[in-house]
Length: 90
Image 1 (cartoon, helix red, strand yellow):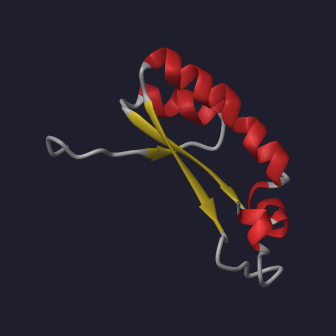
Image 2: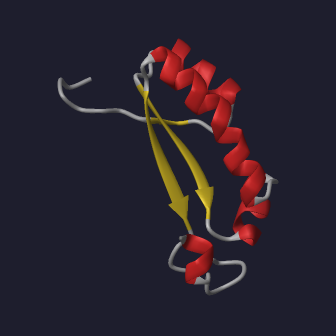
Image 3: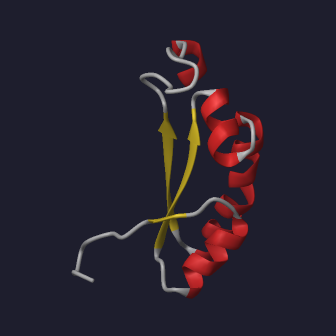
């Protein structure tokens, strides 16, 4: 690893977080989609459920002093439902 470069690890749940930490991850990332259809197809969970999965990760990361990034996909459109309303993004 290069000094000064962050290497965030994408973690889908608390088990993934624990595995990432065991492998030496110092920064993690959580993710969801603005499209319900995309979330259901890719994570088998709705938007609300996927966000609820973040909470234990965020709590543990805070205790561990680990930085967390968050990503939201399909903000400009979804391959399954098409356009995503702005209200669903913000």
